[in-house]
Length: 155
Image (cartoon, rainbow, N blue to C red; front, top):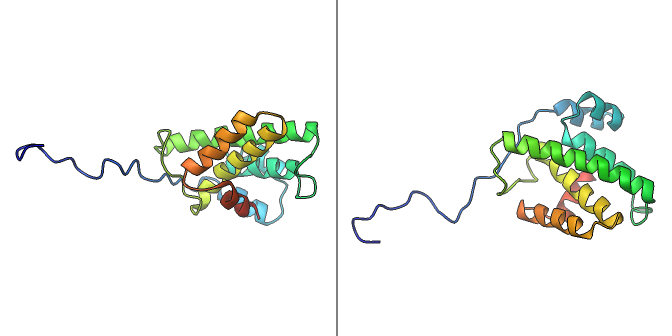
């Protein structure tokens, strides 16, 4: 650029700002902490990614049966996780996300979407959708987190 060329504003390589979802469903988080049924919470708050993510995680089971929860449970978990994922995408778009950029895991309202995305990756792998499983795991990494970090959110 010559001396008279305008200078661009900001860092062109920085990318979009991180997306932080609004806390639209604190009652779901509170209900889960109080031991409420996640299915009831999902029915009462169907746009909550967190409720769907917890249903998927519970359906996939604990460490003892996580490698082989059975076909019916894997498909059910896949459906729950896909619902949470799509509800989260809707929320992200409403919050200004345009298909790229960080979705910080330390921002509590983002965690439902990230947990649904991880559950979708795991369930997809269990039903043989290996390409989708890897795409979901890559989406987590592209969002600025990792499958291991998100798994720790579930406790």
